Image (tube, rainbow, N blue to C red):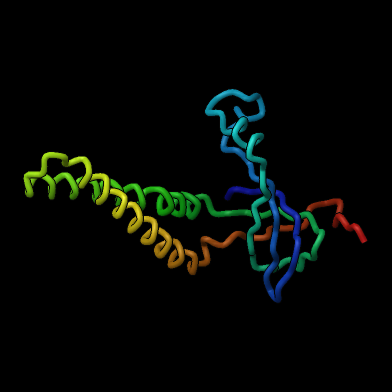
Length: 156
């Protein structure tokens, strides 16, 4: 399980909305080395990530909590988000090339570009549908593990 610290910002019935700071995948961002993701984040800003989770621990707005996500579910979600649209792009571009050859077009790149863009759009829509379907599976839902020591951060 991957764990992250967050702050409860709102509750809705049996659910809580938690904000966590967006974290990088590696430590290179802190030292400003590597892929430049940290530099890009400093230019565009780091927006907090807002997630919804079942509130089994009775957390209230202002509480600092530990949130956990299943690693396998995160991998499947990432695969869906990235691989499905990429596959659509590649299949569409390949079909465009084949169609251009079949029709003996002098500029097959145009057909590959157009059908690749259509394939990408279909892949994005398909990935979104698959993601919504997978989202109904309980193992993709973040889990509120516990309130952190120190209690709530209250401003009132």
